[in-house]
Each structure stands twice: as C-alpha cells, then as structure tokens.
Image 1 (cartoon, one colour):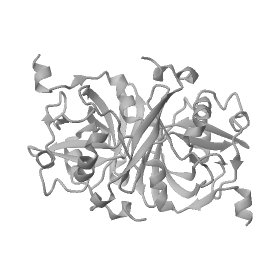
Image 2 (image 1 turned 135 degrees about the vertical axis):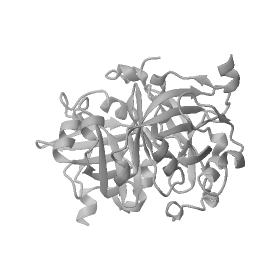
Image 3 (image 1 turned 180 degrees about the vertical axis):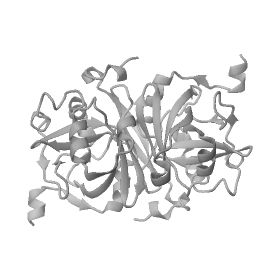
Image 4 (image 1 turned 45 degrees about the horizontal axis):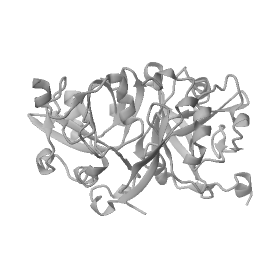
Length: 193
Length: 193
C-alpha cells in the first residue's frame, strides 16, 4: 500500500486510456523540474498523435519559463484539471516560475511521479508522465513530441467537467454528452470498453 | 457582391481570430481535393501552435484516404461543425472517400475557397484554408504543420456549440462559458476584442 499512501487518491490508468483524457481539448497544467525545483504552467497547445501507446504533441516556447526545464530534462507531466480549478488554472498561467514558486503559491499538491522527475499534481483529474521522443520541430516551431510513459487518474475528484479555453480569457466547460458509439464502425480501437 | 453570393452566408474572418475557433478542441472536418474530386474526413488531431499568423498542426496518416490528397497537394480546409451536425460528423468519419463521394452522400455544400483547391463546407461554423508549411514529421509521425491563409465564419448557423470527442464514440457538447478575462494579465494578444 506504499504506492497508494504516497500518491493519495491517485490510481494507475492504462496507457491506452490516455487518449480519452486529452482528445476533447481540455486546458492542461504542465509540470517540469529543474535544479531541484518544480514549476507548473497552463496550456492548451496539445494534441494526441497516436492513441496506443499514447504519443502527444505540445507547443511550448521560450516565452514560457518551463521551456528551459523541458529542453534540458526532456520530461514533463501533463495534468488535466477539473472545472473547479478554473481560477487557479488562469492565475497559474498569468505569473512566471521565474518569480514565484507556483506549487507553493497555489497550494498544489506535488506527488512523486513513477518514471519522471516532474511531480504529479494531486488536485488534477489525470496526470500523464511524458518523455520527449522527438525534438525536430522545437527549434523552429517550439513543438515537442512525447511518449506518455505512465498515467494516473484521480477518481476522488467530484468535479469531472473540464475547461476549454476560447483564446480570450473565457473558458467553456464541458457540457452534456451524446452517445454515438453504435455508429463508430470503422475504428474498433476507439470503441473498446 | 459576387463573393457573397458565391459563398452564401460565409464571411471573411480575421486571421488573428482563427486561434479561437480551434483552441477549445472541437471535432473538425478536413476537406481535401485530388484528381478533380473533393473528399472530407472527421478528425480531432489538431493543435494551434501560433495564434497570429495562425499556425496549426494536424495528425493524419495513411489509414485516412485523405492522406494521399494532402501529401500531393499540400492543401486542406479545416472546418468546424456545430453540434447539430453530430450524426453527420460521426458517419463522415466512418466511411471512406475511396468508396463514396462524401460531399454528395452527406449533402455537404461545397463552396469555393479563396486560396486553396479543397472546398469550404457551407454547413460549418468556421472554415480555415490551410497550406502545409512543414512536413518533417509526416514520414515518421504523420503530423503536418499548416499556415492558415484565409478564414471564414458562418454567422447564419444557429447552433454554436461544438463537439468534443471523448475517444470512444461519445461526444461532449460545449457547455456554459465562464469569463476570467480580468485575470488574463500576461497575454495581451489573447485578450483583445
């Protein structure tokens, strides 16, 4: 039970489920680690490239303090916050790790990841441990490709709605869900339970 | 008024607004053109890399019939459907342009784009004309980078909610919007009106 106590309510999530956390386009928090210090930023610039094993792309540039940490370590954690964290998510994105310890200021619970140095964020719905697998587009386009190597879900969070940034400081919360599974006939990899 | 009649209700959208159409993570339709024939597919594998001028990434591989058209022409139109098109969007994603004329089968209104060969889709909320600007990741990761060179909005569509795929044949509709603009202090480029 050491694993459970170390990470509170977090449980391992199968890697072939990772796709479902990011595909709807939620705002994410990205945690990094450098020189003994963790940092976190807000982003929406991610994409799922392959579902299983999960490969993810993320746009992140020198205008982000996290850029140097990501460049030098090649690791990050992508965490998906619920809508209850909206103000925190916004404020995290509007100050810099160069000035403040954001984990401390925003009372984020840093939990140990299994395979990477950056911490998991205890308050988030999902935490995805990522390692850079291709950096060819970083210099010109500030775009990183990652393999997701381990994933966590926090079933204890009551608020499961995610935040979707409209690009102007407003966020749309995920609303009602419609089920069209019976029409999904060509892509069995996306319809397993 | 030739432009207006040719494209029905569609109006030009400023390129620095394109970011806002894709950032919340909506399901998209991608139209292509090859050998005199238009085709369309459903996707969610896109990301906004730069807001202005807009640069967009899209994952699309040889498992998609549209792949060859995109490879050979270097052009596509990314269109954002409203939630009223949910069943159509799903069915478009579950048949192949190798077998059917999807514009005809799904009664999509193909309208002439301004700068690229693939058609705009009259029923969609937004249409973004795209040209490949970097294909370095195509061979290994099936990921294209585009410049959005012209954009259109259809203000006549009543249903403005977008669809967000949960990766399993269910879609979450965009719900209520919260306004946190006053906390957006570091990123003036995302807060202009």
